[in-house]
Length: 270
Ligand SMILES: [Zn+2]
Image (cartoon, rainbow, N blue to C red; front, side, top):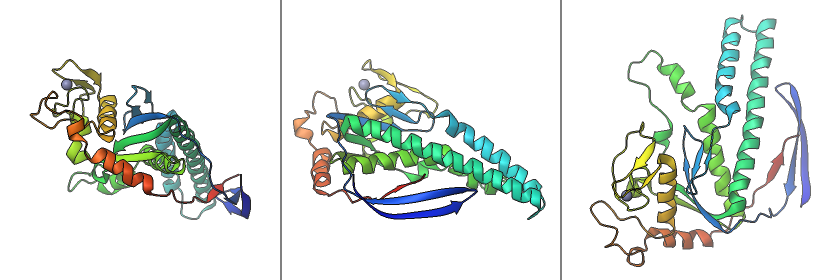
Protein backbone atom coordinates (compact mmCIF):
# COMPACT_ATOMS: atom_id res chain seq x y z
CA UNK A 1 0.00 0.00 0.00
CA UNK A 2 1.82 3.11 1.18
CA UNK A 3 3.25 5.05 4.08
CA UNK A 4 0.87 6.61 6.56
CA UNK A 5 1.51 10.33 6.58
CA UNK A 6 -0.82 12.04 9.00
CA UNK A 7 -3.63 11.07 11.29
CA UNK A 8 -6.08 13.69 12.46
CA UNK A 9 -8.78 12.92 14.97
CA UNK A 10 -11.66 15.31 15.11
CA UNK A 11 -15.18 15.72 16.42
CA UNK A 12 -17.85 16.53 13.89
CA UNK A 13 -21.61 16.64 14.27
CA UNK A 14 -21.79 14.29 17.21
CA UNK A 15 -19.20 11.73 16.12
CA UNK A 16 -15.49 11.17 16.32
CA UNK A 17 -13.60 10.80 13.07
CA UNK A 18 -10.09 9.76 12.24
CA UNK A 19 -8.73 11.09 8.99
CA UNK A 20 -5.68 9.20 7.80
CA UNK A 21 -3.70 10.34 4.81
CA UNK A 22 -1.63 7.71 3.05
CA UNK A 23 1.19 8.58 0.72
CA UNK A 24 0.85 6.06 -2.07
CA UNK A 25 0.74 5.44 -5.76
CA UNK A 26 -2.73 4.00 -6.24
CA UNK A 27 -2.64 0.71 -8.02
CA UNK A 28 -5.70 0.24 -10.09
CA UNK A 29 -6.30 -1.91 -13.07
CA UNK A 30 -8.86 -1.50 -15.76
CA UNK A 31 -10.58 -4.22 -17.70
CA UNK A 32 -10.39 -4.51 -21.46
CA UNK A 33 -13.89 -3.28 -22.10
CA UNK A 34 -15.08 -0.02 -23.58
CA UNK A 35 -18.33 1.49 -22.46
CA UNK A 36 -20.58 4.47 -23.05
CA UNK A 37 -22.40 5.88 -20.05
CA UNK A 38 -25.48 8.06 -19.80
CA UNK A 39 -25.88 9.72 -16.43
CA UNK A 40 -29.47 10.58 -15.76
CA UNK A 41 -31.98 11.45 -13.15
CA UNK A 42 -34.64 8.79 -13.73
CA UNK A 43 -32.04 6.07 -14.04
CA UNK A 44 -28.76 6.79 -12.31
CA UNK A 45 -26.61 5.17 -14.95
CA UNK A 46 -27.36 3.59 -18.33
CA UNK A 47 -24.55 1.69 -20.01
CA UNK A 48 -24.08 1.09 -23.72
CA UNK A 49 -24.18 -2.63 -22.91
CA UNK A 50 -27.86 -2.23 -22.08
CA UNK A 51 -27.27 -2.52 -18.37
CA UNK A 52 -28.97 0.05 -16.16
CA UNK A 53 -28.21 0.95 -12.59
CA UNK A 54 -31.20 2.29 -10.76
CA UNK A 55 -31.00 5.18 -8.35
CA UNK A 56 -30.18 3.83 -4.94
CA UNK A 57 -33.32 3.95 -2.80
CA UNK A 58 -31.61 5.58 0.15
CA UNK A 59 -30.66 8.57 -1.98
CA UNK A 60 -34.16 9.26 -3.19
CA UNK A 61 -35.57 8.73 0.29
CA UNK A 62 -32.94 10.86 1.96
CA UNK A 63 -34.27 14.11 0.57
CA UNK A 64 -37.61 13.63 2.30
CA UNK A 65 -35.96 12.73 5.61
CA UNK A 66 -33.68 15.75 5.54
CA UNK A 67 -36.60 18.00 4.65
CA UNK A 68 -38.67 16.68 7.53
CA UNK A 69 -35.86 17.14 10.03
CA UNK A 70 -35.15 20.65 8.75
CA UNK A 71 -38.80 21.55 9.18
CA UNK A 72 -38.75 20.28 12.77
CA UNK A 73 -35.71 22.45 13.41
CA UNK A 74 -37.40 25.57 12.05
CA UNK A 75 -40.31 25.07 14.43
CA UNK A 76 -38.14 25.23 17.54
CA UNK A 77 -37.19 28.38 19.34
CA UNK A 78 -33.76 29.46 18.20
CA UNK A 79 -30.92 28.15 20.42
CA UNK A 80 -33.35 26.50 22.84
CA UNK A 81 -32.56 23.02 24.11
CA UNK A 82 -35.15 21.49 21.81
CA UNK A 83 -33.67 23.43 18.93
CA UNK A 84 -30.22 22.07 19.74
CA UNK A 85 -31.57 18.56 19.88
CA UNK A 86 -33.33 18.96 16.52
CA UNK A 87 -30.17 20.40 15.05
CA UNK A 88 -28.16 17.37 16.16
CA UNK A 89 -30.78 15.08 14.67
CA UNK A 90 -30.62 16.88 11.31
CA UNK A 91 -26.82 16.73 11.30
CA UNK A 92 -26.94 13.02 12.06
CA UNK A 93 -29.27 12.29 9.14
CA UNK A 94 -27.16 14.36 6.77
CA UNK A 95 -24.02 12.60 7.90
CA UNK A 96 -25.55 9.17 7.41
CA UNK A 97 -26.68 10.03 3.89
CA UNK A 98 -23.27 11.42 3.02
CA UNK A 99 -21.57 8.21 4.17
CA UNK A 100 -23.99 5.96 2.29
CA UNK A 101 -23.60 8.07 -0.81
CA UNK A 102 -19.83 7.93 -0.60
CA UNK A 103 -19.91 4.12 -0.36
CA UNK A 104 -22.27 3.80 -3.29
CA UNK A 105 -20.22 6.18 -5.44
CA UNK A 106 -16.98 4.33 -4.83
CA UNK A 107 -18.38 0.86 -5.23
CA UNK A 108 -20.16 1.71 -8.47
CA UNK A 109 -17.19 3.57 -9.92
CA UNK A 110 -14.77 0.77 -9.00
CA UNK A 111 -17.05 -1.76 -10.65
CA UNK A 112 -17.24 0.21 -13.91
CA UNK A 113 -13.54 1.06 -14.03
CA UNK A 114 -12.62 -2.52 -13.14
CA UNK A 115 -14.32 -3.75 -16.30
CA UNK A 116 -13.43 -1.00 -18.76
CA UNK A 117 -10.42 0.95 -19.94
CA UNK A 118 -12.42 3.49 -21.91
CA UNK A 119 -15.46 5.36 -20.71
CA UNK A 120 -17.32 7.76 -22.98
CA UNK A 121 -19.94 10.14 -21.70
CA UNK A 122 -21.55 13.45 -22.50
CA UNK A 123 -19.77 16.59 -21.48
CA UNK A 124 -21.35 17.88 -18.31
CA UNK A 125 -23.78 20.69 -18.85
CA UNK A 126 -24.58 22.56 -15.73
CA UNK A 127 -27.61 24.18 -17.28
CA UNK A 128 -29.26 20.82 -17.66
CA UNK A 129 -28.68 19.76 -14.10
CA UNK A 130 -30.45 22.67 -12.44
CA UNK A 131 -34.05 23.36 -13.14
CA UNK A 132 -34.70 27.07 -12.94
CA UNK A 133 -37.84 28.15 -11.16
CA UNK A 134 -40.28 30.34 -13.05
CA UNK A 135 -39.77 34.06 -12.79
CA UNK A 136 -41.65 35.61 -9.90
CA UNK A 137 -42.39 32.26 -8.32
CA UNK A 138 -42.96 32.55 -4.58
CA UNK A 139 -41.22 29.25 -4.11
CA UNK A 140 -38.17 30.55 -5.88
CA UNK A 141 -35.93 30.71 -2.84
CA UNK A 142 -36.84 27.25 -1.59
CA UNK A 143 -36.56 25.77 -5.04
CA UNK A 144 -33.09 27.11 -5.60
CA UNK A 145 -31.97 25.37 -2.46
CA UNK A 146 -33.40 22.06 -3.56
CA UNK A 147 -32.30 22.28 -7.16
CA UNK A 148 -29.22 20.24 -6.59
CA UNK A 149 -30.95 17.42 -4.82
CA UNK A 150 -29.09 14.77 -2.89
CA UNK A 151 -29.60 12.52 -5.88
CA UNK A 152 -28.14 15.00 -8.39
CA UNK A 153 -25.12 15.49 -6.18
CA UNK A 154 -24.67 11.73 -5.93
CA UNK A 155 -24.73 11.33 -9.72
CA UNK A 156 -22.24 14.18 -10.11
CA UNK A 157 -19.94 12.55 -7.57
CA UNK A 158 -20.19 9.21 -9.35
CA UNK A 159 -19.20 10.83 -12.63
CA UNK A 160 -16.10 12.46 -11.16
CA UNK A 161 -15.16 9.28 -9.28
CA UNK A 162 -15.23 7.31 -12.54
CA UNK A 163 -13.21 10.05 -14.21
CA UNK A 164 -10.37 10.05 -11.68
CA UNK A 165 -10.36 6.31 -11.03
CA UNK A 166 -9.99 5.58 -14.72
CA UNK A 167 -7.21 8.17 -15.02
CA UNK A 168 -5.39 6.52 -12.10
CA UNK A 169 -5.62 3.20 -13.85
CA UNK A 170 -4.24 4.59 -17.09
CA UNK A 171 -7.56 4.32 -18.89
CA UNK A 172 -9.35 6.95 -20.91
CA UNK A 173 -12.31 9.15 -20.09
CA UNK A 174 -13.80 10.68 -23.21
CA UNK A 175 -16.14 13.64 -23.00
CA UNK A 176 -18.50 13.79 -25.93
CA UNK A 177 -19.48 17.32 -27.03
CA UNK A 178 -23.22 17.32 -26.50
CA UNK A 179 -24.12 20.11 -28.92
CA UNK A 180 -22.15 18.58 -31.76
CA UNK A 181 -23.07 14.94 -31.30
CA UNK A 182 -26.53 15.21 -29.66
CA UNK A 183 -26.41 11.73 -28.10
CA UNK A 184 -30.02 11.77 -26.92
CA UNK A 185 -31.37 12.68 -30.36
CA UNK A 186 -29.25 10.39 -32.51
CA UNK A 187 -29.93 6.82 -33.57
CA UNK A 188 -27.07 4.56 -32.46
CA UNK A 189 -27.71 2.21 -35.37
CA UNK A 190 -28.06 4.50 -38.40
CA UNK A 191 -27.14 7.93 -37.08
CA UNK A 192 -30.36 9.64 -38.05
CA UNK A 193 -31.17 12.54 -35.77
CA UNK A 194 -34.63 13.12 -34.47
CA UNK A 195 -35.78 15.31 -31.61
CA UNK A 196 -37.16 13.45 -28.63
CA UNK A 197 -39.34 14.78 -25.87
CA UNK A 198 -38.05 14.20 -22.35
CA UNK A 199 -41.13 12.07 -21.77
CA UNK A 200 -40.20 9.67 -24.59
CA UNK A 201 -38.30 6.96 -22.79
CA UNK A 202 -37.83 4.68 -25.78
CA UNK A 203 -35.79 5.42 -28.88
CA UNK A 204 -37.61 4.27 -32.03
CA UNK A 205 -36.03 4.86 -35.40
CA UNK A 206 -37.35 4.20 -38.88
CA UNK A 207 -34.30 1.98 -39.47
CA UNK A 208 -35.90 -0.47 -37.06
CA UNK A 209 -33.75 0.34 -34.07
CA UNK A 210 -35.70 0.20 -30.81
CA UNK A 211 -33.76 0.90 -27.66
CA UNK A 212 -34.12 2.37 -24.22
CA UNK A 213 -33.57 6.12 -24.56
CA UNK A 214 -30.65 6.35 -22.14
CA UNK A 215 -28.98 3.18 -23.39
CA UNK A 216 -29.23 4.54 -26.95
CA UNK A 217 -27.60 7.77 -25.82
CA UNK A 218 -24.78 5.84 -24.11
CA UNK A 219 -24.25 3.85 -27.33
CA UNK A 220 -23.95 7.04 -29.39
CA UNK A 221 -21.32 8.35 -26.97
CA UNK A 222 -19.28 5.18 -27.22
CA UNK A 223 -19.50 5.14 -31.01
CA UNK A 224 -18.27 8.71 -31.23
CA UNK A 225 -15.41 8.00 -28.85
CA UNK A 226 -14.30 5.04 -30.88
CA UNK A 227 -14.09 7.19 -33.97
CA UNK A 228 -16.89 5.67 -35.97
CA UNK A 229 -18.63 8.98 -36.01
CA UNK A 230 -22.34 9.02 -36.34
CA UNK A 231 -23.29 10.70 -39.63
CA UNK A 232 -24.90 14.08 -39.24
CA UNK A 233 -28.38 14.97 -40.33
CA UNK A 234 -29.23 14.15 -43.94
CA UNK A 235 -26.29 11.85 -44.54
CA UNK A 236 -26.99 8.20 -45.09
CA UNK A 237 -24.89 5.75 -43.13
CA UNK A 238 -23.74 4.10 -46.36
CA UNK A 239 -21.96 7.23 -47.58
CA UNK A 240 -19.97 7.74 -44.42
CA UNK A 241 -17.33 5.10 -44.00
CA UNK A 242 -15.79 5.03 -40.55
CA UNK A 243 -12.29 5.39 -41.99
CA UNK A 244 -13.14 8.62 -43.77
CA UNK A 245 -14.67 10.00 -40.67
CA UNK A 246 -12.06 9.49 -38.00
CA UNK A 247 -12.74 12.60 -36.10
CA UNK A 248 -12.33 14.02 -32.64
CA UNK A 249 -12.58 10.62 -31.03
CA UNK A 250 -9.11 9.23 -31.57
CA UNK A 251 -7.34 12.57 -31.45
CA UNK A 252 -8.91 13.13 -28.11
CA UNK A 253 -7.81 9.70 -26.96
CA UNK A 254 -4.22 10.40 -27.94
CA UNK A 255 -4.09 13.67 -26.06
CA UNK A 256 -5.76 12.11 -23.02
CA UNK A 257 -3.25 9.29 -22.93
CA UNK A 258 -0.36 11.67 -22.66
CA UNK A 259 -1.75 13.26 -19.55
CA UNK A 260 -0.37 11.80 -16.38
CA UNK A 261 -2.97 11.05 -13.79
CA UNK A 262 -2.65 13.39 -10.83
CA UNK A 263 -1.46 11.88 -7.58
CA UNK A 264 -4.44 11.56 -5.28
CA UNK A 265 -3.95 11.88 -1.56
CA UNK A 266 -6.23 9.45 0.18
CA UNK A 267 -8.34 10.19 3.16
CA UNK A 268 -10.32 7.59 5.01
CA UNK A 269 -13.01 8.24 7.56
CA UNK A 270 -13.34 5.80 10.42
ZN1 LIG B 1 -31.87 4.47 -37.00
